[in-house]
Length: 278
Image (cartoon, rainbow, N blue to C red; front, side):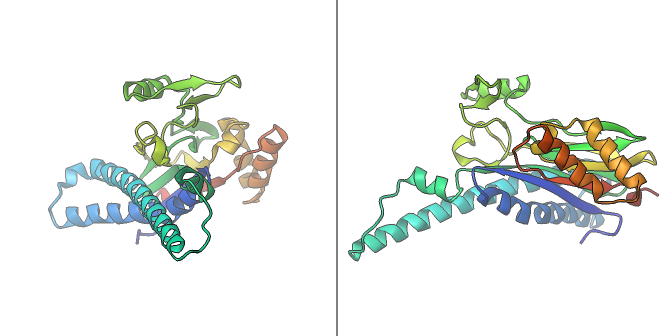
């Protein structure tokens, strides 16, 4: 377990069914904590240089993200094989079998889907923010909003170049949304096994020192950010905190996004950073 001055937080947003997001929300935090604690143990035993502790934590978070994705894809493939075997076995006994193609079965059970994520690990006076896809982390310092993650979407020029250099293609629809292989708007995510060559699970990770000016961190899904600006979100949380209403900001933010036309799922988390600063 992490100490009282250390913690892990995460927001997850699934697409193409619940299977991927449920798996990620159950496993990513555990994998990150285990990887970071293993790094700490190695340093204490002298098997890792303490001078590289910051890089070691970043590497541990990256490894946990990649391991979670690998476990997710492996589980999906096992489930597919077992289910297809069961259907064949039933047919051998003369039981009428519904004709189900692999693609239809995967769609029905959410195994062709994936999940975005934005996470924060607080450790030893620093905060490590990481993300995949379009979940976003925004920090408030002195009332000013600063995005501390960058959305991974097909609209990003560097992401388009990466995908095209890997043999994929990105197109812009009539609604102005860029998509990978005419399918997915995000360019990095957990899962999405059929697009894995281009939609990668490689997180972007930033380490930021927690100073006295760091007030709180907003983690939210794109259902919020597509309609509410970073500063509007921070202002809503600041008003709520000033009025000693710790939950009022959540309703205000969701209502704001809904009134502006958001029909997507909305998840919002606020992390009080003051409790981690000395």
